Figure: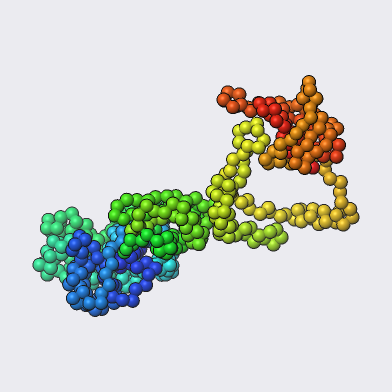
Length: 505
């Protein structure tokens, strides 16, 4: 399509890059895949390639050529996390991202402006995710893919000219098609593009015809975007069985650190962390840990997992780890010129985690009313601190006026505040002398409350749960005592006991 610009993002030796993500290796290293009893080398690091090794060798063959070679198995959990991280980095620079293979993405950069600047930004984002990437830009997929290893930007309309000089081996043909081109003596993309389209289709089929069009610089098929990653996940497969808590936390810190970095790059925090453990020899252990406050701090996550795994250790040794974070928008700290600064979200989350460990998970939260007439009943909802109040110019003026009035003399307290009693939780049990007929309280004693009743208003009857086996029935009174104290008291009509429910200050 005329005017279309496509960027190709490639991570060379993607399985090896995913396995070594965040773990720099200086020794010669080979990545193995295949049957357990006969794995073959599928990727090599730079040191191993310089020593003359190549992919396709068996491990004994590779070590016969390089005795000090280190070998690691392919890690599918690490590759899944690396794929997600690569998609997130690409999605930040393009609205449409298409997957072209393992570690290969195509991005729509049509009308995006300075392509060189975009390339630097994209490769930097991939490096921060621990994935060394190459980027090329052209008018179609094939030219962009061949331009990526050298970081080339093919100017608009020059795809065919750029492709003509490329070796035919870089076309990505199947083994059968590549053998046919070699037999025909066609060693460049330009020589292949010069063939008649009908002859190519007759001999190589539809795959050859599509590649022939691409070799001529024709690519009018739109990019098919993939869905973004909603719940980020990171993991790894262990080289040995881990049964010790400290060793398990040490192994977990690597994928969790990558997960925290990805959430921070997305401007998000985690409100629930799901840990999936692969057990030896078979089996799974899955558990979800809720955070008292959303956080993207590694120390907070590790503290929660330490508590969880200490109370309920895995039933067997662990051979693999995988973590998924339920994301929410991170709350940012906002500094103000006049009002107080907002609480640091990560510092608050860490404090709430420690508090939850001391008190228990069901004793931390924000109280909320329940559908009941009993005033002492409540429930807990997850604590979400409100932002600091916005201070306006009128507020500051009012504050200065209040300070001035305090300097002159304190204002009289508002008597309306006495209409709401300060609750006593739990209620204080009392011994009450009552008037026999109306059961009106005459004298109270219990705890710090003692005195004759000078005034009393009531009773206000409360009934709840009459349809249950154990209904609630109370008579409430507001009383004033001889010592000047004022209280709200009630009598439990089932037991006949009296309780002080609140104090009028």
